[in-house]
Length: 552
Image 1 (cartoon, rainbow, N blue to C red):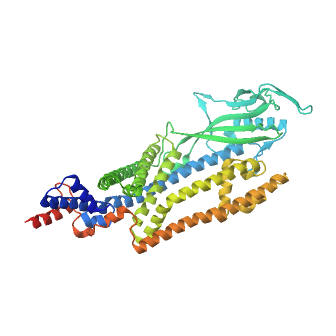
Image 2: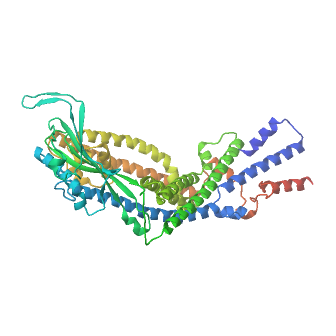
Image 3: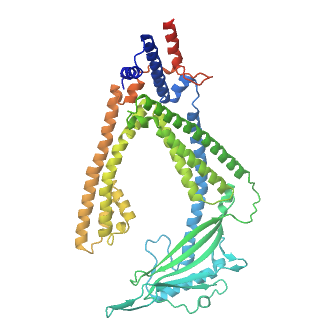
């Protein structure tokens, strides 16, 4: 990228003009190159240097500081509200287990299960009886679901194989794998007696897969009133499952609750006003306006960087490496743009939740939480302008490609251990029952957590599998803790040492840095200021004046 050769090629392509023409053309080319240097150098300045160079106030920096404060306040406010919603769901689920599961023990580690046919009927009768007396036993504001003026029934469904004859004594069986479902609607609120509520219920235990009891209960979350928020109305779809798919003589009993949050149809709150709700909505509107402004400014900076990259590429005759091209694409601006998009979407959704138009708490929490996380991460960009903090950011950026390649290779080994542990140790160890739990267990082992219980909880029912588990666990721990992690740390430390040496020696490592080093004008020299009428850089004006003076 030598300027002399570039100018020589331009002269050669235009023929052989006179010496005066050559002199004027060389000066024009030098002016363009110098202007490009200043434009690129100005683009990579920090906000303080840009202020001294052109007198522009650092609006993006000020907006980011304001955003951090107001978005954090918004997230804390919504987080407290979301905690009340989650707490109400969890406590209702625990309430339903105590109300409808017979002999349920709070905090018990064992799964609820029955082993006799009579116990199955007793548990079903208990559920229906408790449901029929719900108004008399519950301490909450639970109510039956209605369809008009009629109560909706409880649905009892039995799933079983269509046909089958099983004779374990003779080691013979005949089975039709088609699953048949029989459902019965029961109105226990009209017939509290279990015998009247569910007459002639016959369970085919040898062919039975599951029995599911489904009903819907309604409730209102009144605890939000204390925080001056309108309460939500909840529909709890309760499903009690008797699982006999293993046909092992043990039927597990489980209760699950699916929650649907709705806007209450009619409400009246006395002793409080809706002023707090309106102020919250106005605060969310202010956040949206701030994020839109930040989005516009960062988008403009990204577009300017792309245009400048095209100019530099054209000057270098398309011989610019990708590493230099990516320098013009500021990843921090892209991160802020993504953060603004998530925050705007989350704020709009939060406003709809506050006004009871929507009730998507989980989606809103993901959008606001991720947006706030990116806003705080974006602060690192401004810390990078300090030399001692900048080395950390440079190390992370330089080591990122090598770290990704290393993780891809290590991930293949990690997945091989996951699949092997799931297949071999899954039937004998609780932590290896699913691929998800296997991955979590192995990741904990890498970090040195829960190591002894993982070895200890291995069942010794098969000597061969027990020996294999020892070889498996010892080899995994030795490979990943003593080798993989050590190599990973080495990659980071080597990159850190390289960056530190470059900063101490002042070595210019890229063609772009070498090109910018040709511009020695300080930010307060006045050479970077824009012409207010034409919007062009004044960097060319100084050289034009010098050229006119020399001609005169």
